[in-house]
Length: 248
Length: 361
Image (cartoon, rainbow over all chains, first blue to last red):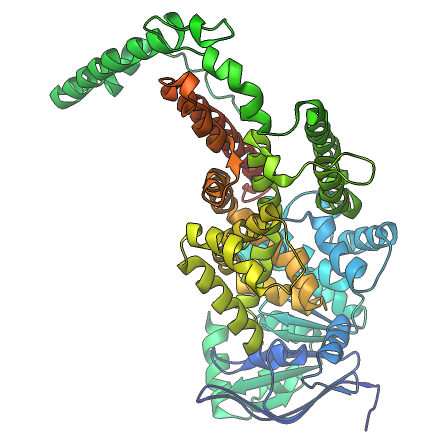
């Protein structure tokens, strides 16, 4: 059962916000190294889905396993899982009172117990990978949106996670900054990272996704490889959605 | 980028636009000038030009101006209260030591050092207590003999350094997801905020001993300190709670997502942002607390104002109350204004690097 090759496993997961049923009988299994793109209309539960993976949201029914460990109310276990799962937010959420470098070394030092010098060396390595090492001593408020999001990716990577979650990472960016962030994500995908991305960037989905998961009203309506999904969507709802999103 | 052209200050143009731009403004400006003319010259006359500065007894006073001889003669009392004269070096040394313990804060690196804060908030208070109160080789000086500005600073300093941590814990507790913690903190805050400060001091001095087991005798000053600190802590908690609410929820989520524990989330991410949001509010509580130290007068402790009060009612020196109160007001104002200046500097420094657009950075 606890197959280490399986990064994430949803088993009939249900969740409600009050009376609103936001996740309905979700079954999904993500292999280690797999790249999943989750799309769907707003309010379809796609953000909630990935926020359950690091327990920013609690599921109320069903089982959810991350790296073979079931998520429960046990706080220590949740913290342990969060160390292995990096997350990138729509609005970056860099810590404004810390420099870029301090943002990146905070968790390695305080959660992993790494020495400052080692953590800084690691951070510089990842900042170089997201092509922003020269801004290490700037504050987030001094960076553009695209730069901030790349720092946010580096910050998550500094914990050397096994899984990365992306919650609409380009939705808050100006058009000319979207590419610089997507480029970094494409590179990350090529390195074999397990990724769950909520995004409307269909070009990105086509290029890197192993599977596209389409959600509507809290359900996974269909899940297929991008080729099949884009050329021959099975459901009427997906056809409608693609029609609208690709026309833009 | 071109430099902004230098602007020369043109007094006439400034006056025309700011003071005499219309009939109403002209009238208001003239009224203001007239009021200044009525009040300022007599004040300067009284306080400086016609005042008496030198002398050593009441006989040196006289004339129309202020007699600062009164303050000069009583200055040691105003500063030290009834602290024995030959022991006052201990108070001076204590102040010097405080400056020494606070010195490392001038360096940014040391400001983040835990030991610097342990020294300032744990070692120094114990050392100061021994130095001021005595015992272990030093002659004992009862706290009832402490007084004047010295007592004001002890009460203010001790309760400030207790009120801030207490306020932080209460504010976090009030937002806790644990119902018991939340209830206890809410009741605690609302109780102390709802009771007049004077009542708290009376309770600390009269009621607290009733609750203590027989034989345990808490010092009166210590009881007053606890009263002031708890009262200020409750106010501080609400100020800080305002700051906590100002930190976006996404910041907390980002901290959680990195695997930080609850206390790490608070200490490293939420509190640094929340506290700098409410620096003006925190300083406001500090200033109010500093001035409220005068209330210890009602439980028989003589702070600066208490000592001035005692001096002006001294039959040998009747008639010099104004000088005394002006002096007390000036000292209080200096300290409070000092805190205000410090807080503005702190705000400016902590705002480094926030919201500077890329092309201006």
